[in-house]
Length: 466
Image (cartoon, rainbow, N blue to C red; front, side, top):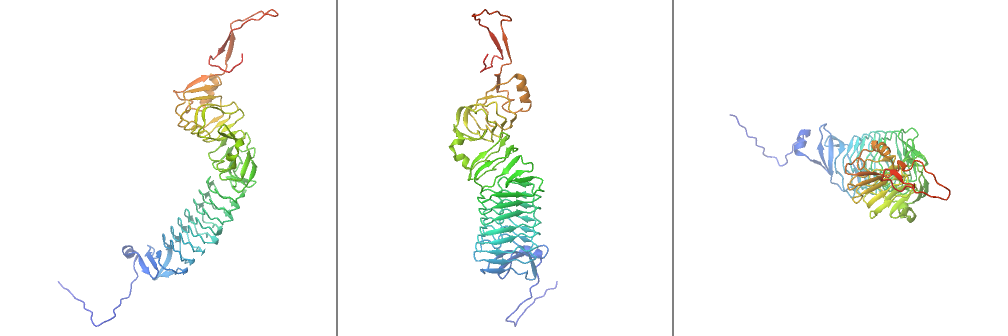
């Protein structure tokens, strides 16, 4: 067996040249350090900056570090850096990671390079002094949720052609943002994507948008106009208000408007949160064509504060029931002329019975859900009843139906759900089907009177004059 010993003597300074570290070695020895930067070597032999430890106000991230190109700004790399005022990102960077610059409260300017593909969740969130304009390049295909949340001084955003979705809360609380154009390549506008943009006055929606969350624009207290491209196949704008393409569903009313609004005659549905936080809306005209008023449609409006809209604990708007106080109890008779009961309008109340008028056309989702004391329903045929209208109201015992057996069978054919098809619910028919007399022929002399015995079918018929 051979062995050797290497001895080095006579040198006071000894140095070795550093060989480039491979990606495999970097995974074992990471993170690597160069000056103020910590980094990892990626599989393509480029690097991702994982941490910046400097205190400079103006940072120029180098194009290369230790001979490797910088292509990624990693998760939380500059997070909570309070001294950073401006940063220049190399052109080869393709990714800005999650929370990369989150909480850099003195960062006032940023230019996103033209090769960036991904901007991660919360990447620039809470950069309170980031001002002026941000251009999202055409190369960007993903902007994560809350990416620019809380950038309070940001006045303009230009969205590139590579992005297809505006994710949840991406521009939430950008309170200086004044106007936004949604380009044709965007298909989806997410939850709270522009929430609490207090200075936003107008929004333009392009051709390609297919989905808009019902809470896309809440608390935009200066918003007065939403315009939609005529070429959009899914949405339309009528006098600055957002509708579906056919104009039959009112989707969103700009919350910066005030005073009175008349809903167009052809509208049949008022969508969830359509007038949410419209604090200046104090009166509204709804036609009887409206059949569905979704949950929360008028929440946060002055309609709730107008005592004339309330009657015995129930909120009426036009010929529609919108809401009710949860303390409502006893047998409640909906007044004649009402055509619809809104979603969840009487849900959770303490009523024991409900009398529905002949005029009623629609009972909607959860209109009477969780009414645990509800035992009886007085009704005629209704055009539409949601399958969940009486969900979790499991104590219903009797339905007094003002119609014939045949009419009930026709109604039941389209409403085979609780409580109408329940074996535990008794159906009592109250309409007169037939009247017969004991006498087939009678003679009455002038001045005489006779008693006639009438037989009414069914015997349960009530409130009839014979």
